[in-house]
Every structure is written in C-alpha cells, then in structure tokens.
Image (cartoon, rainbow, N blue to C red):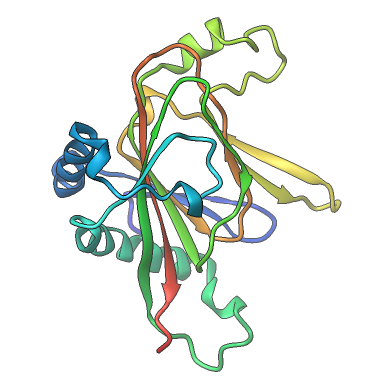
Amino acid sequence: MDSDYLYYTFPTYGYLTKQFTVSDLSPVLLEIDSIKSNFVKAENVNSKLAGQIERQYKLDKSKKHIEDLILPFAQEYDRIFNYFKSFKCLSTIPDITLDDVWVNFQKKYEYNPPHDHSGVLSFVIWVNIPYTSTDEKLYSPGYNSISPKSGNFEFFYINNVNGISVETISVSKETELTCIIFPSTFVHQVYPFYTSDDYRISVAGNFKFNIS
C-alpha cells in the first residue's frame, strides 16, 4: 500500500485518508476563491444535498483536476478492500468516473445530518477548518460531555453484535487538506462548530461506475 494512505477497517470495509498539499489542490482552491468572491454567480446545489448549510455550490472548472487527483485514491481503496466485487449484479467490473462534486461553505451552527450518498465511492476534502479541536472542546455547549462532538465528522456502522456503533473523526485546523474516501452507502454526519465566524470549507464528491 502507498505509504501516503492511512486505512481504517470496520467489520465490513472501512475508509482511507490521504494528506494533500496546497499545490495538489491549486486549481480547486482557485475555483473556491472565485465562488467565495461572488456567491450569486455560482450554481447552488442545496436542493440535491442533505446539508443544513446555506452555501453549497457545484464545482465545474476544477472537476477534471479533482477526478485525476482522487481516482488513484479510489482505485487504492478497491485494492485494499476488494470493494467493487461486492456489487454482485455486475458480471464485469466497469471503470469508475467522477459524478457530482461540490463545495460546502459551512457556517457556525450549521450541520450535516445523518445521510449517505449516491454512487459507488464518496470522498470529502477538508480544505479550510477555522477552529482547533482544543477550542471546540473547551467552549462548545458540550464541553462537559463524556463525548464532545462539535466540529467532528462521524460514521455509523453495524458492529459485530448487530448494534449500531459510530466512528468519530476529529476534524480541526490540524486536519486541513486531508481527504477521506469511503463507500457511498456509509451513513455519516457532520456536527456544528461554535468557536469561529469563518467558513469551514470542504469539497465532496461521488464516483460512479461508467456504464453507458
């Protein structure tokens, strides 16, 4: 396995993470900056998404770059987990291609409820995280909870005794430019954050089988 990848396993399948650089994401960052400079001109995709987020926009100009960047990552996912063979309805495994891709400008108190995606594999890139995990733990409403959650990303999965478990992934300033990839059917959610007035910016997308 490429040493740049980190992988995590649930009872069935799991997820991979990879750290990108500003240079890797340069065309994506340019398009995000362009959208941010004039939200009115961007294509809002709220009606297609579950997010309780005001500003969610389609990415067009950098879509090909994102596909080229993430496709090897998706192929590595299948190599590790042998995931595509789980689609028993297919006699042969077709190539995958990037379908929808969008950017979220998440504000303080906004959130993504539990949901899944369309497609075969989905990914998220945490582009800009305007808070630290320390600040969120200290100053969010759940600071005294046994399980602080604010600002985090979370998967739901069926455990070995057929109960529902969660995998909570800390997302903060320290995880900027990290990409995570996972099966599109994985139910996941994003908690609100409380300690910054800046946008939490993430890019998300779905790969689908290329079946003509």
